[in-house]
Length: 159
Length: 420
Image (cartoon, rainbow over all chains, first blue to last red; front, side):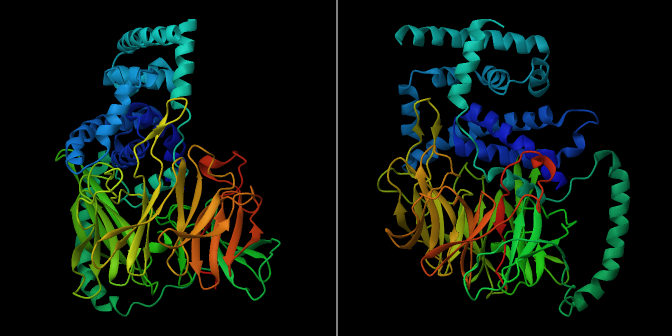
């Protein structure tokens, strides 16, 4: 039960983080599962007094980053086998909406947006998870918000 | 905070917030972690090394004796529980057995004759994480899912994964533990990940995902009883099966799968992800496929209508899939339609979704019928084409523990063994 007590409450927000980064439900679940395994093996590296949430979320974010790479590389293999991934990408391209705007953000900007605007984490925790100074987090959020704001204005103008 | 920022936050919440994880994800993740060896504290490595060295010497000393005695290891004593209360039972006539359940993480049996609830202490085994990985077989509680227990209940299988970040890969192992002696026997190892499917006609079946679940192809493997435990790939054949409609690969991706006689059923999403009005995308599980365990050939048994999603519950005593069918995006706990797949594209209705109190979570078949456990703290029995509510398992007897304490949700019930 200790394992569940330690990691259990983090699974759902970890999934939300992974889904926010990957926009794919199955990949997000896989990312959480693999990140949990990695975190479990590295548990001894969790410093006394350090929060487990930012520590674990860093594993999830890193796993998502790695899976994005492997996913995109696997697209070629899947397409060769007749997979649907190509069609999915076309759907993404066709949808000029907030989701696409978030997808268009760089990984670092998207991570900051998901952590702060979606998971509502405070800036200092976002800095801990991303491993950058607080000022860098603010800078990334500022730039990401500016990019998304442009999209929102366009959307509102159309709507 | 600026209005624009708040508006952005609101829109992002609306975009992403509707996507909730599979209710079983938490249990699945914890179960996978629990199947791993306990990590040791790094600062203690010198001490650990010394202990390991001493342990190795000691183990070597006793190994010869152990090996000699393993085949004659006496059965460990059966566990004894304590009665914690009585509950009303509405059992069909003639069923007077004790049903093993795990409720809110508590292992217990429920006497269908008297209504007596007997609780058992949770295991201290690091692999035992209630309620996600518990089976009751041969009079013992075992720290794995029921399908991982061998038919004679003398052993169970489990898989582990060892990460090697420096080498950039992971190493999977499949082991069989002798219940009586407690000794593990490694039957297979390889790169990537492995997941136990269950025991079938020819031996133990498992899924091997060389590059990780969801990131590449998967193979179904068998550890054969005959041939001194040789391991062979079973399927799928062809290895790049192409679905006629979408081209999606009906691979085994760590989703649910069940052994059924000479085949193994799996459910997966064959169609491209769909997006709802809020822009969220999701892959609906829409296809049930049977893999022939002799040839590895795949055949589609059921394809859900567009807009519907499948939730596999298990298989009945005849090895036929039992599953829920509900609208994509609907609440899985709100009385779904429940079907029994009797043959390709032929279903038998178990529940039509009109009873909101019937919210099945998983299924377990034994000689009494098909036990369906509920998200709403109840156990039902499907028998002779009739669905019967057997009992409610009150939160009072099974208080939430750990992280779920204080949530005041109906107890989550799992039937984890045959009613005997």
